[in-house]
Image 1 (cartoon, one colour):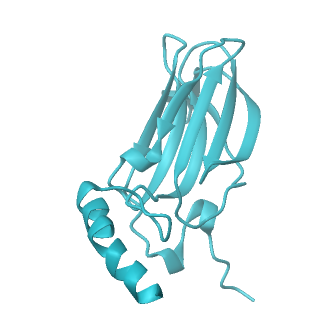
Image 2 (cartoon, one colour):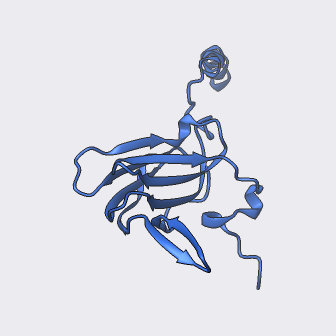
Image 3 (spheres, helix red, strand yellow):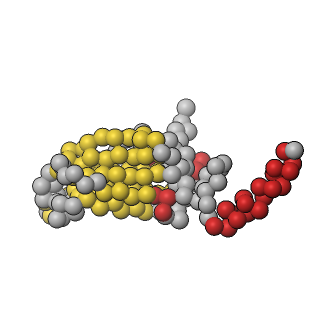
Length: 161
């Protein structure tokens, strides 16, 4: 009886696979590993950035970050701009999954949303950045470079004993 059900389901499974439908088992093509998340502010005023991280439908991180504005620094005779910002503690699982980032600036009502599953990358670094006009953008980089066994930043494996 089980064999008949399996044989009857095979055409539907093959069709779903061809259409790119996520099956209820295994990681879909939208699974991504979030290696690191930082908040930066290149606006000249300080802001509060509210962030949420969702992993496979579960809210795994929600926090607000006060970030100072861009400032000019002079050091050793050189003058340069320094963005305000902070690293986000890695409260999400280090395994790949469907990751959605949400953020907003100060008391604004509208949240900016980024679904990392829309990227073709297996892993990403992400930045929530307050732009010079005060709006929030998400930037990503797929230059992970390290195999999963040698994770960097969020998924750092401590090999020293």
